[in-house]
Amino acid sequence: MRLAALCVCLASSAVAQERHDCIMDPSLVIEVGSAVDGLLKEAFVTRGDDIAKGQLIARLDGRVQEAALEYARELAQSGSTVDIAQNRLELAQSEVERAEELLNRNLIADAVVQTLRSRTSEAELQLQQAEIDQRLASLEQARVEAQLDQRNIISPIDGIVITRMMSPGEYVFSQAPVAQLAQTNPIHVEVFLPTELYATISKGGTGLIFPAAPIGGEYKAEIIAIDRVFDAASDTFGVRLALQNPDGTLPTGLDCQVLFEAE
Image 1: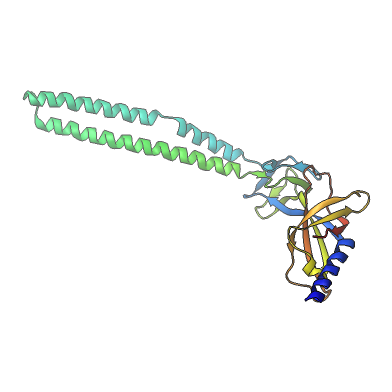
Image 2: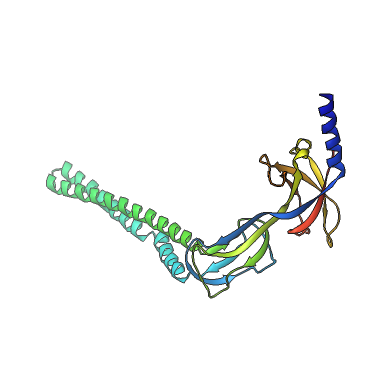
């Protein structure tokens, strides 16, 4: 037991003193495209631009949807049908009230009152239908607005634009990417270590990152992932560290070295 503990201690000391080659990668690389087909009307970003989550990347031509939205909005905002039905119902109700007074004084036939009551019921149904149509018009407006929103291509992350694949005037298919984006905060530092150092590395530990020239400097990163499947061919296992990069000054795709700090 003492010998095993001594071996682990020596290995820990070795990993704390030895630098290992690593690479600094974006924590996420994605390709964004359009949910619908259409002609690309405008592009708002280009290669190397910083981009924020929710920012507009590009927009497809939406003149047909804009016209449909204007029509749907007019229908949804117009309350004339409901107002007319409401007025008809109020008029029918007042006629029934007057007819019932005359009926009580035996000045009108009961059949006339029944006819007026039937008209009142019809007016109530017409008002209900008008209100339903009004709600359906509002739903149609929301549907067309959603269709128009689908023609806006939005960034789902904070990061940078690696490349833009399409330009205004090109036809966009729903499966075709428009731009490739990278999330650079945090940066993922990838390193492969000999398997004999496996017992000396644990999640939550830290390492010092030394980017290659011309960046240089020294940065602290946290261990966030340790492979539990070894590479038998090279007798190594992978470790990932997260290097915070809130201001985006550190580039990615850069060689580095990592010095793990002893626990």
